[in-house]
Amino acid sequence: MQGWHGWDDYAPFYDWENDQTFGRQDVPFWVGLADRVGGPVLELGCGTGRVSLPVARRVERFVGVDRSEPMLKKLRTRLRRGRLGRRASLVQGDIRALPFRNRCRFKLVMAPYGILQSLLRDVDVRMTLDSVAGFLPRGGVLGIDLVPDLSRWQ
Image 1 (spheres, one colour):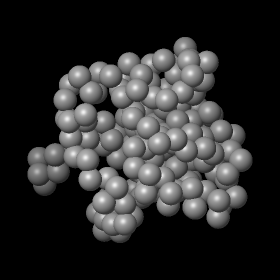
Image 2 (tube, one colour):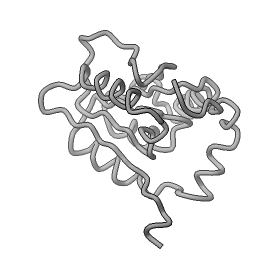
Image 3 (cartoon, one colour):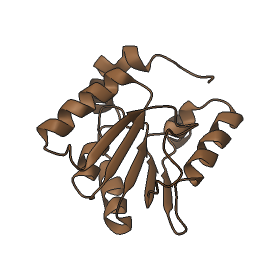
């Protein structure tokens, strides 16, 4: 896949960088969407759990996918500490080809914090959307967050 491959190296700084920049401003939106749609919920690019933890507390079943094992390790620890291990599971994988069986369905698939923008080629975005479509039932919701070019808004 084209794009930046430094997520494993970035894991120790990921939470700090988020707190210094965007923070958790979008978390109420994702929690509210999960409350309205219900579960099961799938998060693409779950990272260290900035969105995952508050959403997992609200739904009966949560699954997070990320390509970085160091980030997933941090999130596993946080899920265990929050006693969310029974309702949440994590999978290391590529969002372009989700590693689930076709019978698996999610009422809500979340793509927060511009995760789709980390895919630099159109073909990678198409592959991701095709993969997600296979796990959304009729009436399911795909939530996508796009980070704008901030210079245009200043």
